[in-house]
Length: 90
Length: 275
Image 1 (cartoon, rainbow over the protein chains, first blue to last red):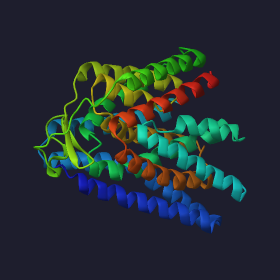
Image 2: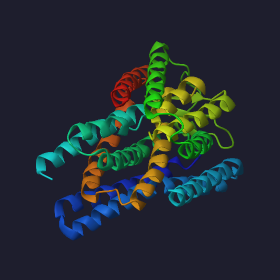
Image 3: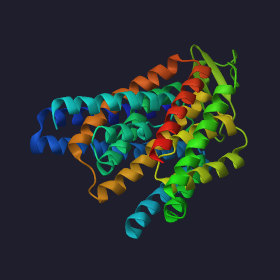
Image 4: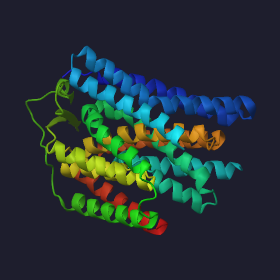
């Protein structure tokens, strides 16, 4: 059952380390540079679930599992539309 | 903020994210009231709750992906229903009073806790014919196998149409009430769609991270995030999510179910206090 779970775990691990290091440095350094690092940590984190969805979609296409790749694409589309729609509606 | 206050935020994030990762409940529903009890306004605490959910979800995801305790295909299918429902819920916000909604959610949390705690033993048993190479998802289906101690447990979710409809309904309610909904998704996956308790928790941890990241982007557009406080929560929740995923690996499925039931009762109490 090869589904690239270790590759996915590695991608997640890189994001965790990047976000954690940026947040830790941001807290320790403080000031404007520290704030920039805090924001970088938040951006890395906020992007992580979306990156994970894209990685899954690509791996499912590679496995020729087109049904679930299409479902992931539909979910990504739904999320993007809901973000844009909600921000305009509010 | 003082060093003591910073350390308190980190400690609260560690504890709530650990609990959240064990049961797939997120933990923001507990963290946000705790922060507000400490004097923080709900406007400032809510984005920190989302940051905590995302950080806990990402940190736990690494371990859960390698142990096969996340079924991503199941997550994507059910999340299509839950996200559609949440959009409808947001559009309908104001139709029901917040008080009524919170009471409904509290009753659901108690019912889910009782359902999970009442069930004995393991629904899915280890298969000695399977090896570690079989751990993971089965391409083209929602079936899979996860690692439990040194054995491999295969599973196949069932009652998917009913489950996805209920997920959509849960999405409507969470959209209306403005809560994450991890405490609805885990019991629905486990008790209705018959996913193993650990896989239900791991899968829910992934989906709530996805939902929370969308909500966080919306709050960032509104300029509601204080980066310095958020960085403290990131630190605490990354540690908490990692600990939670590790602890979940060591616990047996019935213990995970009982721990989740206790957390659900705590959530119900928080919801009743909020109502």
